[in-house]
Image 1 (spheres, rainbow, N blue to C red):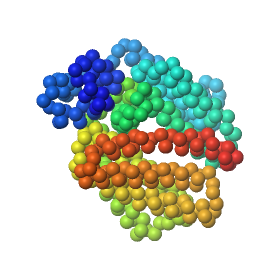
Image 2 (image 1 turned 120 degrees about the vertical axis):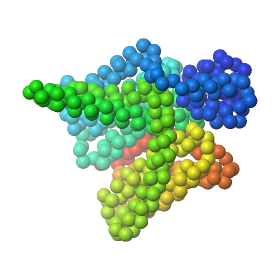
Image 3 (image 1 turned 120 degrees about the horizontal axis):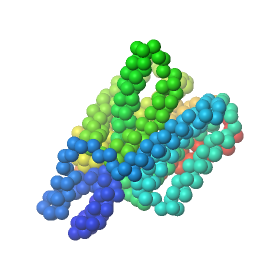
Image 4 (image 1 turned 90 degrees about the vertical axis):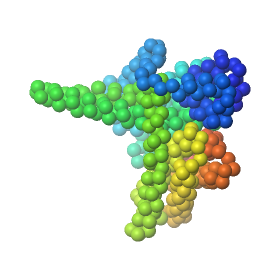
Length: 414
């Protein structure tokens, strides 16, 4: 995006097209350009335009708002399918929870980015393939491969959403990092929407109780489910039409939580030694250990995305480097524990999936830590760290597809 902006400084029409096609990425790229080109008239004009403070909330075009309303209603209908057709909820929701929201979000970005017919067909075909595959797996509640497929299918649908988000710029690192930032902004916005919805629900239910009417069951079965299904769709719409709503909140969260997580992780590792907990023989502890690893990885990715957006190398980079280094140690412990369990009790679908995931995460962490060290040594900039993460994302997608679609066949649905 930086190169496209620089090459079109004398072409106002093309700059406007770039801005309208991807406002968040355009603003992020421009923020890194401005300090280097302050004397350029076009650069100064866009700086004033992009930093103009507008407190009003934009509701977008009427067509886009109508699309969001319809998509939210469809998502609610999908969530209610078990009640409409007497489908076993224990069968339906573990396999299909991702299809409640992800296809609607994918359709939103496919429309927003004007994807070609070929790309829309590819997105539709892959989504249907996931839908058919997961629902035709044998209904064995004790099957580890079924559980793994259900979990990784969510990541597979997340990857399809990412494909629709980046549009025609699939190899653009800025666009991929924009997708990570979108996820962070969406979490913030959806959380706010759900908190507001919970407050509204409490007030509504209690007001009806005051007049002797108990509407809890009806309210939760319809308004509650439809509201939960609509929240991420509405949150996406708001973040895309009003990036200023959470544009200043997400960086603050990243800056606050990164050092806090670093301190917590150091204390936690010391507490593990003190308590004598053994991830090598305690399966439940190893599971929690891996969940901790995934959570810290997500915080690192989110924080790098926000730090790269500012383009500044400072204390935040040191915090991220130390956090990456400690997470590498945690990952090393987890991998050694999994290898120990495999050598003692043999390979299982769960152990294979966790080992593969941890190995990929370890490689990614080493690459990220290496780039962060280069930033500290002033050999590169923060954007290079984002590029490492961005270009590694397809590796996770490939592994997700292997676990989702091949593990049930490899391990004979066990």
